[in-house]
Image 1: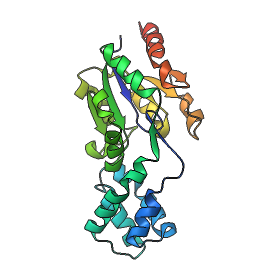
Image 2: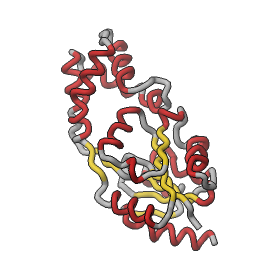
Image 3: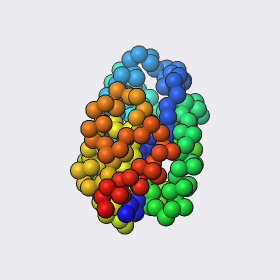
Image 4: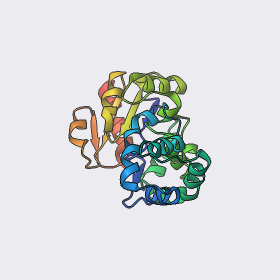
Length: 227
């Protein structure tokens, strides 16, 4: 009965590796003290994901300014571009992701990405050429709405042309994203990544999996249960 599947991005399709050198290297190029400016950068997380702060260049500039350092936007942009390969190298695509996405498309399911993300996260997504597997992408910084607000899920289903009740949402459960999806009528599939929020997310999941390969069987199970 499912016509569409919505996926989270980070800790779902793409994983962070330890030792991201990006912030250290950008800070060094701009003459910033990492211990001073990175906490200020972190404070701007939600505002950047919501598109209030319009991207990583402005976010770094504001963080530097909060520590008393002025960085020209062109200098920040150059540093970000220079060190983006280091950021990209600290991520990897889940080894089950491409096979799963390809299989779901072959089954005729409409696929959407629904991610709390800013511009640099979208760059990571495109760096790994994942966009080709999706019918639509919904990045929070573009729609200016964060999960678990119902609007971000309904935007995705509207763009797919399907009802929320005919969609499933797959994610690691951070930010109560599964509760938000369930709230608009979606079935919810939790990927147990052993993260700090995993246990609380279990209560928001219809099915719990240990990997993406189990998604097709979970969709069949959920479809039968809803019939």
